[in-house]
Length: 330
Ligand code: GDP
Image (cartoon, rainbow, N blue to C red; front, top):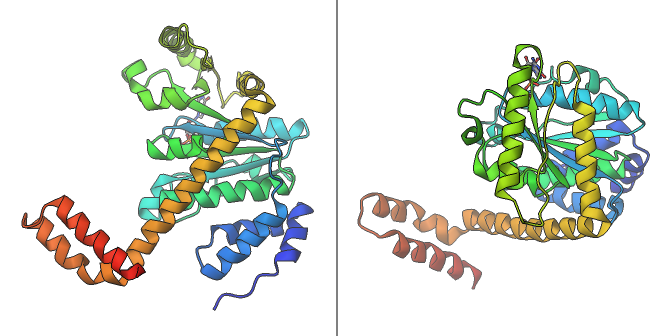
């Protein structure tokens, strides 16, 4: 039996910005225990300020090794020095699959981790990507309630997790390298569609010239692709997270993107994200119910064997599964 949660005390602690309370609140919203989920809802209802645009939510993405944590460390410490309070969250698809993690490494971002005005939380360790996204979205609300006005959500550049993170932030920033092998083709088309700001990192030392060239090339290509359209054309910058050069410029472009949206655009964007999030939660819950359905459990192995043996066509098999599920509801 889970210990009952003192929600009002937790709410007060979060509002005061107490780190221990923030940590406990995030653990609560990450929990999948039914008792915790009820308490988490109560907590979020008490702390969330609907319609508030006071925080800046930014996604930071790129392949492992591109320099995400170095960049976040450089950006985060600059922002806290300017008086911001910075929260860092992570959506790590490797932790979803294996329980291991690419992003969770405790030795990363040492300076920012020690900064009293920053709060770093590794990716929730398990569950589905949907579950991790739900936890992260709610952790973001906790951080905002605790006074963190900039929330950076880090994710690794592998497909669906980036789309997921793009769906929870105001501005999505993609880090890349000059030497991605085949230059433009090295960046998946899907990324360009969701990126609001692109930065070619490691623009230092002998890679400086090549990085600037790559940025120019990509910038030109993007302008061609979007020529004549009204949409925001992602700017392409160079930076060196290691030498902390160009980092302010990337932040300035993030701010410019936010200005471009304007309060109305941002409200609209966040409302759309809420709607998508609602359906994602519904789908998540439905697949969970499907998994728990006694009727489905009773026939699952048999149907699976029949499909694998080629004796039952997939559409018919799906009908049988759904019929078993529906029968449970009656
Ligand atoms: P992540 O996996 O994307 O989080 O990448 P890290 O931030 O851990 O960086 C991977 C490696 O690249 C580390 O050895 C960093 O020191 C190095 N690195 C990160 N940013 C830069 C940069 O701007 N220039 C150079 N030369 N190296 C960098």
